[in-house]
Image 1 (cartoon, helix red, strand yellow):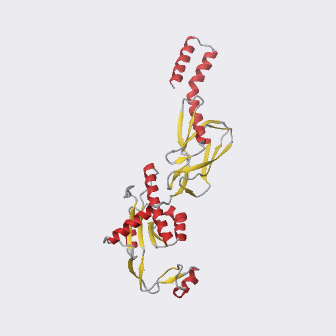
Image 2 (spheres, rainbow, N blue to C red):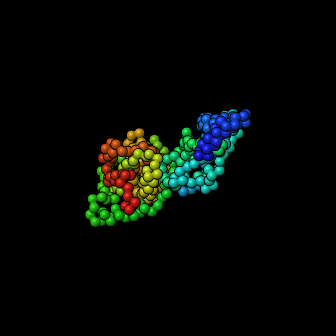
Image 3 (cartoon, helix red, strand yellow):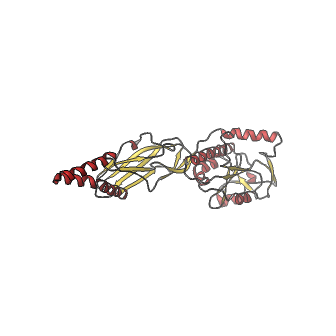
Length: 334
């Protein structure tokens, strides 16, 4: 810009002192450069079309997944020097296509096939965040966000963190803590639960099997149960790095605990808010897999803040122990 201003002053002095056709042509070319460049940049904003997507609906955290970026010049004028940018704290492209500028002829369409790695679990916007445009000499430069970002659903990593938590709860129980993994629940004689290996066929609820196609067994009047009800209270997401990191740690704890119960075939009832209070029982590897691959995106998609009393009221109707798992209370050291 400094060079441009100096050049404008120079051609103004030249045309005032010397005149002549060449001096005036040069003067008007320099004078009109910025307005024409500004109009050109507006044209780019209007003509440039950008689409991006990931091949899979669910992405594994830290794993390279297929990603596609489509760029199209919908106008009659060539477009040059388009560069893209993204949040490197959240997204990583192993082969970074954003380091080189793109140029498109009129009506040209360019497809970029790449790999994307998402650093955190949860649902958030990833991929290309926006693009930078400039005039030929780089005097004017503007950034613009893409109209439609790519929304990813990233699955958290399952760790052994739950084993430490369960062990601590068991120790608390032995030390007289009111929290117990085993409580006596009262059930009606015709209440049922899912059939498990070793159950007697005499206990099978055949009418329930005829309705659902799944095996259930009747529960006795009093049964020793290991049911724990976990109430999930996630916070609102603002797509900031802090909220994404917090959700990542929250989901990692959640799926690790759920996986522990599923693999041990011990029942864990999850309560969450998603257009009303919803619940889901994890009591087998199959139910955990369904929770991990299908329900997990719903668990954190709606904030439960403001609905806590509604959820607890619903949970209070169920017997067993209740654990409230608040995202805001998460502590790395706990």
